[in-house]
Length: 305
Ligand code: NAP
Image 1 (cartoon, helix red, strand yellow):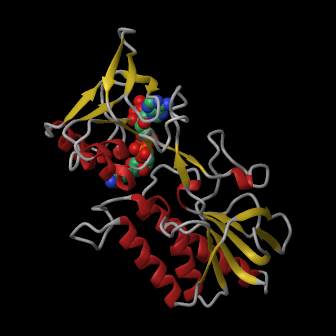
Image 2 (cartoon, rainbow, N blue to C red; image 1 turned 30 degrees about the vertical axis):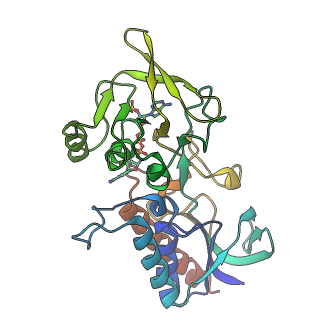
């Protein structure tokens, strides 16, 4: 039986693994894909303390994994398919095995929200993307559109100007939600045209994206924008399918914790983007992971395990 099983290998998970392993707890982190979570698809990070020069998301993710492993954390690449959390001995079922642990830290993060308009599903991977960093280079010399008004949309639009002659930024309101520094960069970039007060009604294309129909929500007028790529950046939804009905969630589906990352189940903690919180950043995910691991250690000690 493990002391701590961490589900999810983003910054929250790897920081929890680092702290738990360094506290000499028998620690296993389970990640179904590549290490880093959403961070792995971030081209540059300029707001993680300690890196005066920007660092790439994948690079930071690898460093976090290496650091956790150095203290003895084990990493398993597998998918968790079920969790039994309400017993003292927690059960973690993966595609290959059933594992047991004294504590579980849920760090499954969040995934991109979908637009839900006609054409989106059909053209996913054929011009519709949720990751500019991953797919941007495929759109060299093509006109593309980014949908959204937050930090991700602004960063994606700026990133895409490296490859694309023109980037439309389609936003449903008349002001961006993105931080000022990103807004200024967007407004001063000649390649970006912001399409204000507009929502995407439909994405056109037979085999690949050929254009987008957008509607101005103030005038009700629709227009077609010629674009060969659509990058959807309208926020995220939590990856809580696995724990629905097992731990307490808020209305938006995020796990509710207290300041100690404690969920409503003893011995079960949540950290990072998956939990209800005000600021979803790599630094706050890492902080959550550290607190969760510390609390898991205290739980084990207090229960004289
Ligand atoms: P976000 O901040 O939630 O912004 C989502 C944007 O999409 C908003 O502008 C929202 O419009 C729009 N939107 C939401 N649903 C929509 C829909 N159905 N149709 C059209 N537009 C829709 O999400 P995010 O930009 O992905 O950022 C998520 C978190 O990561 C934030 O906390 C952000 O600060 C952080 N982040 C930080 C950095 C950085 O620090 N460098 C980079 C990326 C992300 P409204 O504005 O009208 O609500």
